[in-house]
Every structure is written in C-alpha cells, then in structure tokens.
Length: 415
Image 1 (cartoon, rainbow, N blue to C red):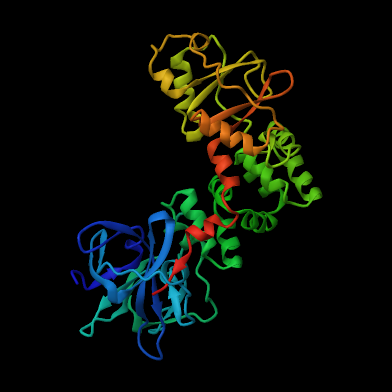
Image 2: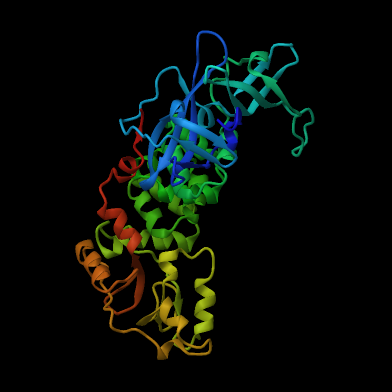
C-alpha cells in the first residue's frame, strides 16, 4: 500500500476508486475490531456507492490508500451488512470517547486515531490524537493536544459513549440529507442525543430530510420552546406534516409559541389531507406583482434560502403578494426570465396556459399534471382564485416513493 499510517477522520468523504480509476463511492467510516490483547484491528470501510447505498469493503480488498483517495481491487460483496459484536465504527462511535493516560497524568478525549499496516498486512490502531480537558473556565480556552500510542492509554469504562459534540464536528461538512442518513445509522438514543446538540437551523434542515418516525422521536424529546424555534425554521409544509403526527394538545402548545404568521400557515396546511394539493403545498413561493421587472424577479430567486424547486418559477398575483394573495394571474418560468431584458415587466411575459389546481386536488392528478407539462411547481388557488400555495415536484416524489425508500437506498451491506 502507498501509505502505512492513516488518520481515520481524514478518510471521511474520500473517494473510493476501482483498479482502472473509476470512482465507485466515498468513505463513510472505518470499522475496527477489539481483540483479546493489543490494539484493535481494522476490519474494513463503510462506503457509500451509487444511489446512496452503503456497502462494507473488507480491508483486504483495499489495495492502496493515498491522500484523498482509496483504491480497491474492484470486488464488492453486496450481502447485507451486520455490525459484529466486537466491531466498532471509528467516526460514529470512537471519536470523542474519553481515555486515561497510563502514566497517571490524567484523562483526555480522542479527536482522531490512526491505523497502521504491519508486516502481516494487518491494519492496527496505532497512534491517537487526543485533547486534555481545558484548564481555564473561559468559554474560548481549549485543552492541550498530544499524540500517544494505543498502548499508552486505557479507555474510560465509565464513558463508553462518544461525545455528541465530537460527532457533530466530524459531520460538520455533510449536507442535511447526508447528515440525516448518518443520524439514522445511530442507535435511537444516540440519534436523539446528537440531534439535540445541533443548532436550531441545522436541526430544522435535518428534520425535513428524516422519515416520519425519526422526526417524532426527536421532537418528542425537545421542550416546547425549542420545538417551536425549530419548527419556525422548517418549510411550512414539512412542519405541518410533522405536527399532524404529534398529539393534538402538544401540537397546539407548540403552535402557540411559534411566530404568529408561521403558525397560521401551518394551521392552514393541517386542514387538508396529506395526499391533496393543500396537504402537499408550501405557502412560501416566490410571488411578484405584474409590474415587477425581470431583474427584480431574478433578485428574489437568487436568495440562498429559496429552495431550488421554488426558484424555478415566479408566481404573479394582484396584491397582497403573500399567501393568501390577491387574484392569481400567472407564472413565469426561470428559463423565460433569462430570455428577456432586465427591465421587462412580468405582466407581459406571463404563462397562463398552466391551470392552477384547487387545494382538494388529489396527488394522482398533480403528478400527472407535473409530468404532462414538464413542471417543477404547480400553483394552488382557492375558490376566489387567490394563490394559497405551490406544490413542488420534490414534495410529490416524497409521497409517491415507498415509506421505506430511505432505508432501502441506504441499506448497509457486509462482505
């Protein structure tokens, strides 16, 4: 192998390639097995391949480890992965654990660890990068760090759980969808502990990506004030779906603590069946007046907080321009905005061919309409033709896929 010592935290996210150089996935974690004596031995890597499916690649099938990449012999066994009793995931379970130094100088926390290849082609845990507790009470001080060998420490048997803060730091670069997948890999109690340590905005993003069961487990462990803050930051349609699965008195208590406008949006969405346009729609599309210019519309959809599906179209109404709006006039697709000069008025380039749907329209008609007209979003209007929301293609897909699609795609396998 090209490298004989590798620090595990630096492997997270590295590309995995086959012998001819084609990328097959990325490293998610490394598994090590404890032995009767001596340092733990690496057994393999957990690798995410196409379709977000996770497979186990035995260390014997890794032919090279170099900066930023791992080369395998190309053989991947797709049998279902089951983590054996003596195996531990380094990133998910070991980083952040406490150890005691055998020289009596105190305890420390594991921030990274290295595996090193011996002359028998085994990869054993060698060095640990550890941090001592901070010595000053101030909020900015941090303890000193040092490198030690595995044999110089003993694991703290009273602390067999990795700190949530360390795991969050390791996953800091993951997007919300990948972070949600990582949380689902953890035992239930661990998942809840880590989720509670996320800041409100990050937790809101992750909850939008989690299945219903995991959403409820996490929210049930939050106090009402924290739950209200997090739900305020979620998309109204996602928040409404979550709230409908909570006990009625708990949902109402949370709504009473939320921003009044956000709570009103969620209450309005909760009136509709989840498989209708009213239950699927978001109440925060990009809305403009007919007198607004192409430049003004482009500025609105450039905002980073606007989801890609919502940024694909601008909806034009009479005032007011927040849902529930004035009378709906039409929509302008992003691609059409690009074809006109910045000063052009939206009222002159409206697409009025797409018929809006009512909030009671069933999902079966919605997905056919989206497909027939190659749309990303579909306007929803009330009886008076006021725009009350927009159904986006990603919301429809979430409901058309089987309930366990996330776990099927991310099924871990072991060779």
